[in-house]
Length: 511
Ligand code: KIV
Ligand code: ZN
Image 1 (cartoon, rainbow, N blue to C red):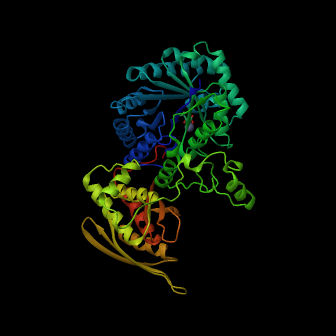
Image 2 (image 1 turned 90 degrees about the horizontal axis):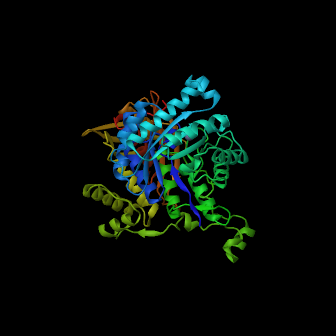
Image 3 (image 1 turned 135 degrees about the vertical axis):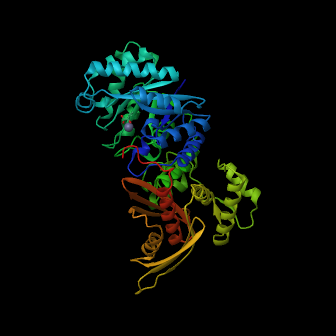
């Protein structure tokens, strides 16, 4: 009998705390739907007390997701717990996750509380949370640097108060795998009521050990791992979901547990999170990096041709890498388009959105003979972006770029029905385009990131551009795709400007 390892995904909460990864409510909903298809057990959708925007995002996710538990984070105080409880009101299965720091440095310098006060506040918070939900998680923040006797004392009391999951965070990524595994074992052995709760871990990657520490904890009895897609998260990030899941799945002979994750949804999840946050995935990243299954050396290629298992311990298709499958072409009709979106798990909210997406598909098919799943996913992302309440729209553009000449761009944009024209020079065609757009929108924002990725292979592939803009401490990401990367850049810039303009976009909770 293998135990279930609960996968608690915190991409929408801890992942979102990466500077620059702030998401809108719509973006959170799209990622939450994808996480549900991935079959994660728990989705931590946000921190409702952090901002009204995050409250609304958690509420929206709670109202939509049916197959995963939806969780909201709260500090151990009344106001936060009421906000989390309210945000989760419509959840079919909801969890309140409350936390309070327990390390000497956090209690003394940050909280300015005595250990007795910390125990009292934690117990009170858990009891209050239980008035809203039967499913309550408590985290002693900075457990990795907390004193063991104090941890045993507080955790015994919060379990008695009704906490059903105890999550042990290595908040600053300080512990070593053997030490962290030992911590979990000691806590489970020493706390008399430890069998009344599920033991969970939440490891940060400051020393590159988040996955190793989490797996060591699993070997010592942890049955929930908190992790994120692509390892996104504060500073160096959290344990990466795909690495945890595939380690446990690939080494079923070693681990006493397995997950219910639908592993073929791993790569689509990674791509979606990367495209929404603008955080590219490094090519050599395990499982989801572009080179994770590529064999360059002749000896390796020869071995793989003779027997795949000579150099591969997992199958690329099992984690969702597809062979750039040709799915649709210029002559495909509306039904085939709709059917393929359905197979990809993409639902468009209205018939109008479907019509608009189909029109974009026809435009794309005119420019590009073969349309792949990745193109469809990007096309629908573009469609979702266009429903953000576009204040500015790109009507047309022209770019002149010639060796020895100064590049020039001319853009026509619509601002609430009226057309505006501008032109500008620049150090390159993209720079000239951004300057021309800026002449119209006058956002004054600082460009923090510009990245281009090919969505599929071939010179007729669509380029996906991400632009990150910062203004008055507020950071937004814009994305755009087109077979012409200068047009994709213009779309991405305008998408980001529209987010700055829209009230929907919320500030990063820690700004
Ligand atoms: O890293 C941490 O300690 C956290 C807690 C809120 C669980 O993110
Ligand atoms: Zn964290």
